[in-house]
Image (cartoon, rainbow, N blue to C red; front, side, top):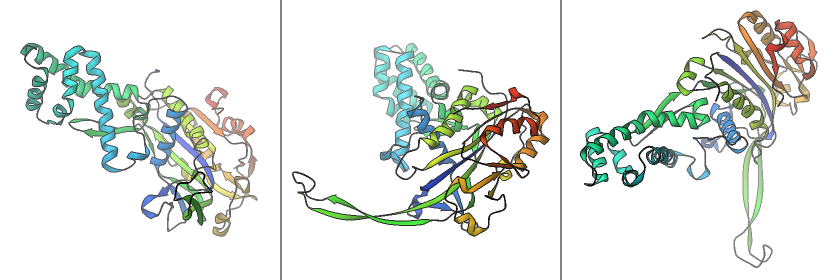
Length: 389
């Protein structure tokens, strides 16, 4: 693993959805989240993190701690599942560092031992689990090792093993074991760059209700389905990578590379019934030279224009159905980056070839984007990196 990152960076990500629900609200019949005042589509940071986690687990074979398995999606069952994983990690370390019959006896009573908040009571149960065949001096030595495993070593192992904890931090507390750490990568809620239209669909699914030799021979009935989808939404996410917090989780540059891959390709590969139709359109990471410095509000420097490069009316915004119908104005973004060029270490980017950008009224396509960053901002060739996803 590479060293912990030393530079702060900002991330800007644009993607769109067509005839899909990017982030339903379970409290509101799984409707897409809409800002009632502006008609803008909202997507939570939790949804983006879920996309990244699933991609890193399924496509990059990375260990991911927080998983949304269908049977434990909400409430106490999810807490129990995460608690079980914490205990499993402790058991592995007990076998590795203590081993033999002693580790086996401790593991048999591990749930009871960990439930005790008092160190004295915990040690009493620990000693009892080992039995009379182990001397008091050995018990004292093993309990000291157990407490170190339960606290310091568990934390170290979790952050070393699970990439999502290094990226996003964790708040895990179950049965007197726990880890609490603010993640170095924080995203704001994603928001569409325009007002969206919401469509309601109603259909029916024919289901067998009686067994038969074949589907046709069994008795059937129709069940109605109802769902809300957005004909189109172009969503912008903004995030910060905090180099100071990264020291606490061990976040490395290799982790950041996987993160960027997960943002772009995770979005593209999120092929479920409600999410199919998502496409990444633009991804930017600005890495700074100075500690604790970033420009901020990069997401507010992106504007959506119509085909002629003019502002979109509310009616035009709701009628957008494809990325080819709009242009993305990045003039303000380019100007801001140019103003702080001496503080920029490098820029990483990826863009979709179907996107058309505008800078000061000039049309800009994918092939010209790198030169635009270099010439208008004033960066060198080795400071502008195309990710090439």
